[in-house]
Length: 232
Image (tube, rainbow, N blue to C red; front, side, top):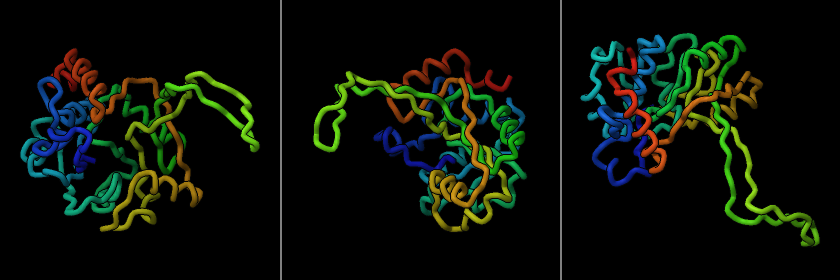
């Protein structure tokens, strides 16, 4: 999924699509594609929209990366999984859907293996994150009497990493050609219909380059392994 506008990285993304934002000696999407190649992936479809001509010009048919790349061009934004409807019939029985701006050490083979082992319809890769509120939190009862005081409480969450393993035939009734669809809505519809939607909790590095502090960390991470060495 490489069609987003990257609004949090404005003004840079007014002239450069987010997947082409540089990390060291290569764009973030190149690191991801090389990592996929290192995990045995050979066929990739890039769903593109914003400044898509730049992405297509940069990666071409993927031959330089040892991949076969095709493109699903969105004339209008289709959401975080709507473009799948354009290419569903060309997907393998089970396939990975990823955000195109990932910086992660996640083992994609393990995600696929767990998806197969559980016979899941959809598998969401998740990471445990801890969030701390910078204030004292007051709990009250129905009569506004204070029942507890918690100073700067910390809460653990499981967050989606934007890496999904999907089963092609399980998606057919949920994705409609030409209709926008976001991943949370797809997963909610699948769960409501009784489909097997699982989480795969990983212990890995994962960064959201839309956040300035994570982008800086990503620069440091990739500086230790140039893009040309990722698939070696």
